[in-house]
Length: 210
Image 1: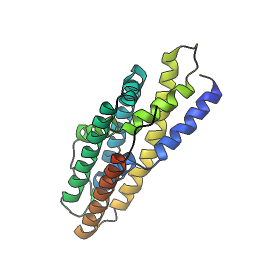
Image 2: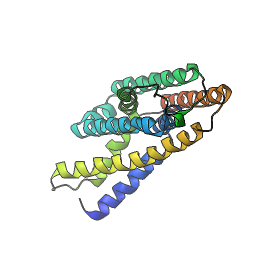
Image 3: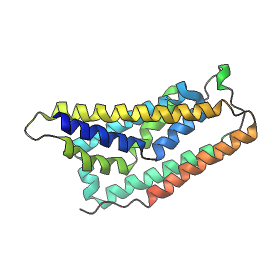
Image 4: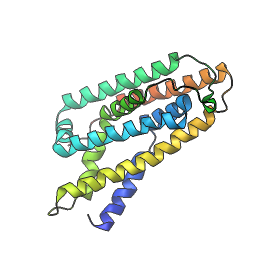
């Protein structure tokens, strides 16, 4: 891959990672509830899900989704339902003062939080459409495809991990200042509402015209 193509890919990856969405809300929610070390495992899940989406687009699933309104809508409404589930879980979660700086045992398993991150990206049609549109822009025809795909996938993973570290760390810093149940309950409502807003936005997302 030529250097100029990689620079363009690098810039596009930052835009993709920094754009507000369910991933950023997910990372901030994890940082708030579990602290940085455990909460950041959610970012690992997001990247694994991102790679799965990348692989699906590369092998042709993205084309199927773009060509089939049924496939697109199944994926979209699955994403809407999952975001509403996350939001409702956050709203109904028990409000108790957070004392992560005192070495409390995390309230969620590592594999559980990673699995949630994977699921979040797997059912987001925006990721499929975005990659379907941008990946071909970075691939040089006539050159081996495998190494180019690896470079693109690693670049997107790097920027996503950096950005989600910021979101998770910022929320975990806020968490250390939460001393009352009322404060925690308020923030749980905020993040639960944000997940549901993301679900509504996803519900209005339309398939690109071919």
